[in-house]
Length: 71
Image (cartoon, rainbow, N blue to C red; front, side):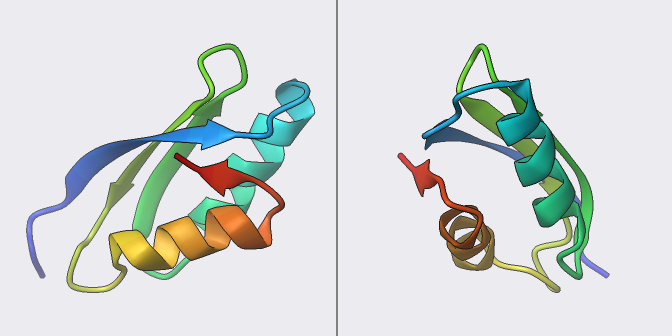
């Protein structure tokens, strides 16, 4: 297992705190994501993950699939 890393992504398309909560939940379901916390006010999501199990591209695709746009 690789050392877990933390990455912050800017996300466009949040309209309310429910949007950010839904994205955090969706990212948390990806295999290899340890923690995901999205902030509506900042338009950002912080993800702690195992890079051997999930890639940044996988997470960006999940952001898109959830109806948002990674910046």
